[in-house]
Length: 205
Figure 1 (spheres, one colour):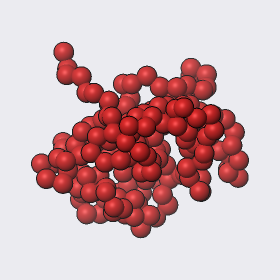
Figure 2: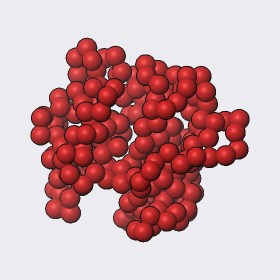
Figure 3: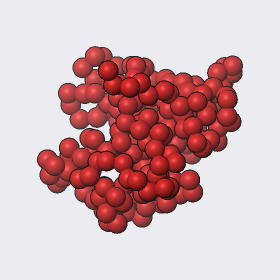
Figure 4: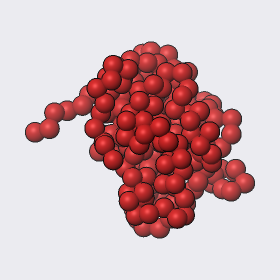
């Protein structure tokens, strides 16, 4: 798999946002579980579009505790959270659902990247990576790709792209784990980001 960024013009415009996702794993996050099983929650703003990616990842020794999630948001100077998602957030179940995620308006950067990496049949490839019969190579790709492309994080049910933000406003997000009936079980973490102010990427020393 080619994991380098494309030189296409439509991708270069938002490359910083894609690259910002790749460094999420190195940023401090909120934890809400024992050290052996913890969920890290991060939020990163896009400098080119009015959007913030809320991303969560689980560090566990067993299978993930949750497959479905809720995301709440409030402004930093407010006390009340509002749930952003109408339906529980979970992995896409069909190729059509995955394609709809990547082809939504404003996501040409994610689409171009995944097509360059996996080809035009990327949606079916992403489904195979999540299947019980996935090969070791496919499982390795499934673990890596959500940190490299926000579209994959959304398709795998491991992120929420908030496209209703106002530039300069700081938002606080909470992620909740749900049971199989869609009821909240626990708050997994909290993260903060300011719309239009992406985190600075420090040069490698």
